[in-house]
Structure formats: C-alpha cells, structure tokens
Length: 219
Image (tube, rainbow, N blue to C red; front, top):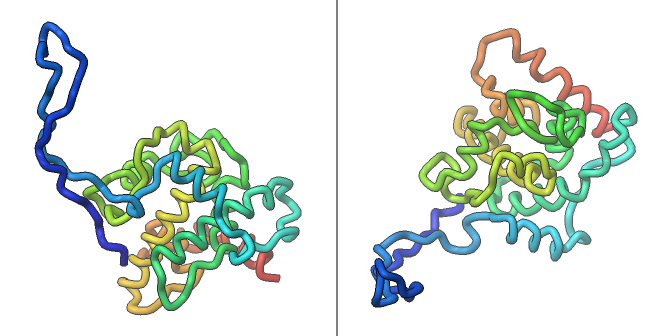
C-alpha cells in the first residue's frame, strides 16, 4: 500500500500587488498541508507520463479479438500504460491483467467515448460519486488521488482510463480483504459493481457482457 505523503507548509509571507486594501504588498499565508509529488495525478502529470512511458516493457491487452467493436483496439496503449503504472504503484502477488480493464471498458461503454448515459460519463462510464471519491484527499483512495479535474474531463479517454484503473485497483484491494485471497477477474468486476457479496441473481446479468468480452480476449 502506498502511504499518504504530505508535508506541512508553515505560515509565511507572500508578496501581492499593492492596493488600497493592502498597501504593504505583503500577505500572510496560513499553515496548510501540501501533497507531495508521486501521490497524485493532475492533467500535466498524466500528459507527461503518457509521453515518456517505456512502451517496450509493458503488456498490452489482446487486439484483433473484439470484431463487433470497430474501436476496441484504439485504447490499447492507454490501457497498457496505466495498468502497468498502477501495478507498480500498488504491487501484489497477482498483477491486474490489462485484458480485465479492456473487457470492463467494453462492457461499460462499447468503447464509445461519450455513450450519453445520464448516470455515468465517458468511455469508462465513471459516475459522479466515483469521480468525487477519486479526488477526495480524505477519502477511500486518499493515498493516491487525482486533482483539478472536472466532470467534462471524463469524456477524454486519456483522463478517464487512468481514473477507471485507479478505481479498479481500489476495488481489487477491497475484494482481497473480503475474500482473504487474491480475487479473480470476475470477482474484481463484481466488487467494482458493488455486487461481490450480493446474493441477488442480478450478479449473473451484471457479469454477462464482461464475461463475453473477457473470454474473447483470452481465446
């Protein structure tokens, strides 16, 4: 687990434009906490990572398998980069398979960048509640969050995919805690959908599309 990293910024003075309200041109900045690099992602950092990532040493999801989805393979590089990134950020005995991510995205949106769903946004179909949690420095993913994004940014797969994968890693860890062992692909997805411990028969329906796509990727 990655520990939360913050530093205390002491009360200090800061120069500001001279005005009638502040003729001295100096204001006092209160003591606060600042999150250190390496414990969050903003737009600039996401762009940097995607630009410099070593593509020779990462595992891509399978391509050419989901023939009913013309755009299925267009996101493979993003999926590969961010699955590898978070596998390294949150190491475990069993790494997350990029095919799990690809099948999940396909089952959620059919690889459409903006499926026009009032309940969720973008190719990864992230809900407003999940989006809020991913940026909450005191919430359940506080050890590694996203900052300075708006809901509109979720329509950009360069933003939506790392967010979805970060959330998937959170659910993977929760499933491990509930099961007492590393969860398999379907168990991760059930936890992602909030159904891992559910006794409802809806679990079968919720897994149907993911299972179809994942099996095709693994053929």
